[in-house]
Amino acid sequence: MSEEEKRLDIDAIPGERWFPKETAFEDDMNLYWGDWGVASEVDKLRAVLLRRPGKEIESFDAAQYRFSDEPVDVELMRAQHDRVAEIYREHGVKVYYVEEQREDRPNAIFCRDLMFMTPEGAIITRPGMAARRGEERYIAKALADIGVPIVRTINGDGMFEGANAMWVDRETVVLSTGSRCNRSGYEQVETELRRMGVTEILHMQQPYSNIHIDGLMNAASHDIVMVHASQVPYDVLDVLKKKGYKILEAPSTTEVRETFGCNFVALEPGLILMPEGNPRCQAMLEDNGIKVITVDISEIMKGRGALHCITAFLKRG
Image (cartoon, rainbow, N blue to C red):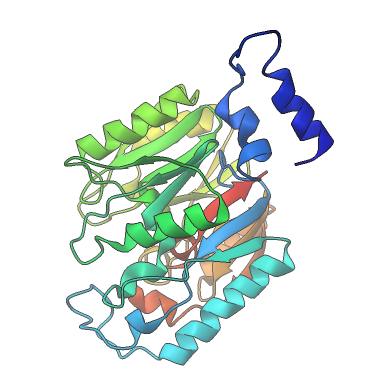
């Protein structure tokens, strides 16, 4: 502990008796936990948590775990995942890994679903699919090992996955219900966010055909958001427009549904990492001032997820 940190601790115990240190948890984060916290989908990306494909993808029943029926090239999937991590590092992002995981959980590569990062730490989720339950235990362990505080674990009859929430700004979050987030899970997350100072929760009802927000809507900067317009409620987009966002309607349903044109990761405002194979979405973003880097994750996408799905944000800003 530095002399300044020692002084801050001592200052919290003045006089002859013990007195509380009346600071907010967020204010204490760097001092006691580390440089963690997220309240944006686009602020400069500083740290992420990934699961490099392990034994869990070497032998499994694709139908049971909702993977593609096509054979999985294990080494290619790992190589593509390594390339994504390399790009993150090239842009100054610290990459952490979930080192342990159940060997019967091939979907564990999709870390976004297993946690949702806030300014005060991580909310550990409770996946909707039985085939994914238990993965979250190892996310919690990885977070504890590196010093990320866990502010809540979804419990009771709650279901919630991290991709059912999206930061708009420090006071605004989109939170969706559907097959992967029920009312109990929604209310548990809402309680934590409101306690942290979020004043506006935009409820988004997931359509029957979709499970997560990031398959339908994603921000590329503080004033550009790409959406699958026919699947995102008017009320949600109306709020975003009033907050100054320009709504880009993804020009290809095929790209949104099959090659994950909306499932990109902002490295900083106006610079995104996007899956290869989405030329129309890419062109629209670039025509609106967004810089786009593409990467081949074709083997990863056989698991019906893409870049945003495999990336759990730990620090932005």
